Image (cartoon, rainbow, N blue to C red):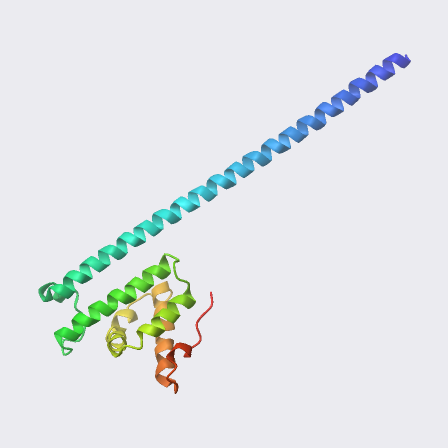
Length: 183
């Protein structure tokens, strides 16, 4: 009888050990699958980001090529020229070039190669140019057509504030004017 009890205890102990080992293996397998799913999801996110950046780079190249053609050929410029026609043609060509620079900085921001503060500081430098300021004012009607909640409209408002700060500034140290936004 005592032998049977010992055998039963050993068998119960072995069953308990087997049950604990099975539970541990099941938990480890579940954690491994969960980690694999997380890594797969992260890989997909990185691939999507790479595709987005490639697409943005392609779009920026196309934008520049189209603008360059308009700058080089006034007959093509008339297709996209929505500036006031009383502005001399040469100045409107300069506006196209200013727009190319603004779009370049905007695309760097979209591609997350610049944060909002870096974009602000770069634009603060560009707005030292009277032509760039004139371009900004002349293109106000274009920005007015943007959806108010869009990133581009929000950045336009940020730049409007920067221009206002520069205009109201009483210092020659333009690089300290305004309060760069923080993300």
